[in-house]
Length: 319
Image 1: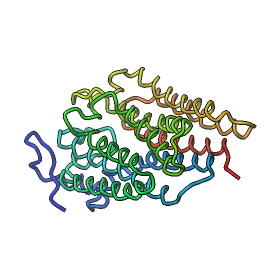
Image 2: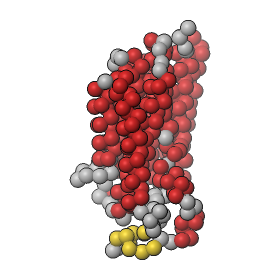
Image 3: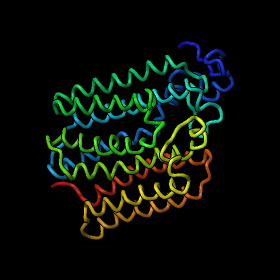
Image 4: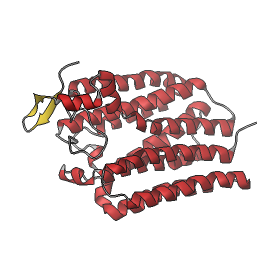
């Protein structure tokens, strides 16, 4: 591994702080794990599982090859996007020692941009490799989905107008980590794109978008100084609190309207995530902008998983 460098006013010119490196572990594997942010990868897995479940529930069909390749491809795109984001923000001189969120390896000088960029390419390459299997199953629509997904992953932090600098990040997540992932997986299993798969994708995508909203709310001060106009900055503190609550609660309301559960088991399955959604919303509103908001990243991601499981319980399984 090449010598990592820290950023100062002259660029990447000074050796990294050894004490800081030891605090995270100096092995390449540990540094990569920190940059990948594995605790967020549930956002890639849940939509694929939701789309697979819906294919099973509505058509009693599911392909293990599709499940495995879709999960790996989806997670690889997210990993590549995270690594690319780490590199680009680090090279801009952002997200250094004063960062409130999880540490970024490039900005802290624990890995060079070249190293993480190569691993980002490897992640996108893995997604392409798995995507070729999916293309053999689903044809040209999967080519379009794959190309656009990878392009957006790169454009999230790069280019003249990065998505991460705009108010459109949450919409990007809703579309690609919700609608596209669920409906695309459903299509791979069934050969169809139904209104119900699109609706389920929107429902599952709302908590994923809420995760990014929490992230942008936490970083609102540093982001605004860096010239960003994220949704959290545009709508303000109170607007962010309201929007987070709306995303969480509407995902459950949408699921209930979508499923129209029958019997007490179905309604109980919907009541559990509703209670959790309200609980998290109230807690999020009370939390000041601080590193303590990081807990809501994991909690909101776990809520997405809870919602998906609750939907499965409410609908049941085919005979």
